[in-house]
Length: 216
Image (cartoon, rainbow, N blue to C red; front, side, top):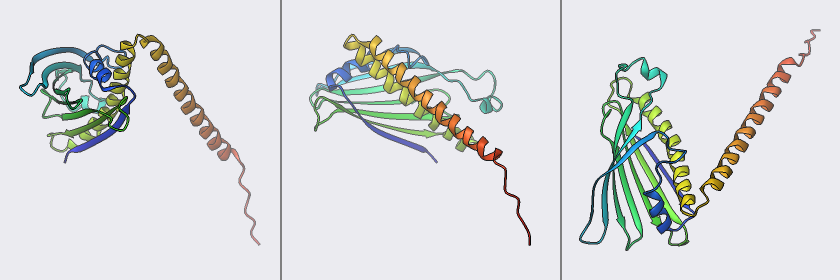
């Protein structure tokens, strides 16, 4: 059984800007788990499309329950291959990534399509898909659930990293980062306040004396 994830979003920047920012998104404050990136191969095809293959190294921190199962000498780095095809004529870019090591433990394949929004040419449409599988007998389901949860978290960071790179192109990365940090702090404050209110309600309910029942 393979876990599947799909998400679509509109990036409020032109395809040209998104294309440029894509190659400049590392390093950024939201992707500190990305350690290295290297271009392995690049060529322009006969139909004027740009094909690139890159190798990325990322950290691979295991959850605590997995550390009890898998050997302590298991590599904490994961090597990712990223293939991309840029079609400037149709103003689209497709990327496909997959991990080279730890494939028995988990395989994560991701495909992204960046396309100029036909209804709103100043925006870019993004479709992100992922397939997560595990070959560990007896533990494949929890491993896939963990992989899906981590992928969802990382794709949020990836979007923030791309937005940061876009703002960097316009020279206002610091201002954008301050706004994003303030937004996150505000959201966390709201979550904390809601949790505190709910807890107070529960405590008040528990402290309310119950009416004694009378029997005739």
